[in-house]
Length: 453
Image 1 (cartoon, rainbow, N blue to C red):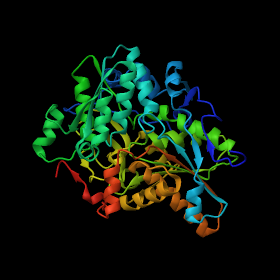
Image 2: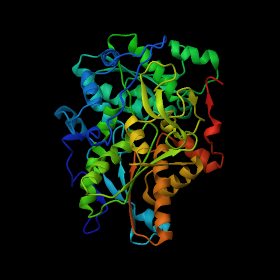
Image 3: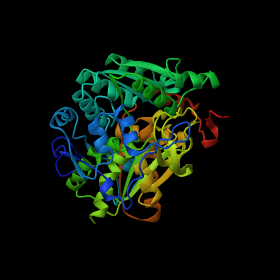
């Protein structure tokens, strides 16, 4: 490598021994979840705790509202992390050359596609499976959009000897058959959601037999399975506080790696569906800003077809379609909203992480929305320059990073840009085929539907 510091990963940094919890550093305490029964009765904290305890391991629930800034990562989890962490941080020098950027405009990316699942999702799947195993749970139900989360939990379930049942959003189930095959190869059972296997799925199909599904619907089905079986817990791959907590390993590593590069980012970027990979890279930089060590803008990027942070309402809403989950204070498009079938299936969620939502609402983070075709244009440009094929979700961050670089160039400013390349796109070739053939189209918010329509 010599003096050309372009890769900062396995040989240069260590795996963090604790996750960063953003809750103690918030300007205002996070709003608690709410559960309202069909007759309009609002449950108290103890009753909500009982409901949550039937779905999640106790350690995850403790982490959900923990007042501790640093939460130790179990040694057994670190041992598994060692198979792919630290993930590399690279400077996109070839992309910089293609874009014709001046030396003062630099693009770095943290590459999470090196994990066994090809994305950032194992960062939370592994500890969640570990905590469930510690409690004697034998089965986990979950949902997945594009399949990255389902793949990660299938792998973690195999490692810890836990059965995994996955409700995969139907449009992605049909678009991405190899994700389904991967999950099944690791031993998971996979259904195209909505199904007739649950009351929630049957209800949706009764209203819309041709439903393409949504993450909200798939969550309802997975939660119902867990709620009806004592040996089964539910696992979520984004949105919840403990999930964002586990993902902060990304940003903690990135901070150390950027220091090795003798650089400090001016903007930190991540794509957003439920918010986990963005929180993973952005929350540690939020802490760094509070320490007075950074002035970075923290930029969330979402699809125009599902623009939760940029077009949603900030209010309490359900996390799923059928109303089986607590209500959370977050940006939402409405829990019965079904986005258009864009290829970035992992970003097709009606709500967002309450923590990310709060920080955006309070002006501590920014959000933009971008179109699908422009994202794939950026993804192909990146792939041809850097040699890595990005996931459609990650292409949103690439689009924003390129736009930031070109804006800096046009303004004659220096700018160091860091984005999270949250996964590879090896199972998304049908999407790239659509782009390459010219058949890929854009959708805006109005292209979605609601189940009440």
